[in-house]
Image (tube, rainbow, N blue to C red):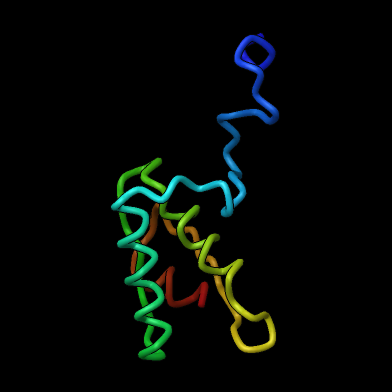
Length: 90
């Protein structure tokens, strides 16, 4: 109903937002820069934050920008569990 009313061309509140359509807020831009810095250092990073804060979207945006022959990205959703569970996932 609201999609037609506001003349949206796509559903505005989809969970899987296309990384190219991400609004470049200050927080998102800073997170992106920090992740790119990790790549330059060839380091490992951990992204944490409140539910719905854009963690997965920022990581997906970075992943989409990487050359698939040079990088292998792992996504480990760990909302519960302990550090050993995370190590087992890796």
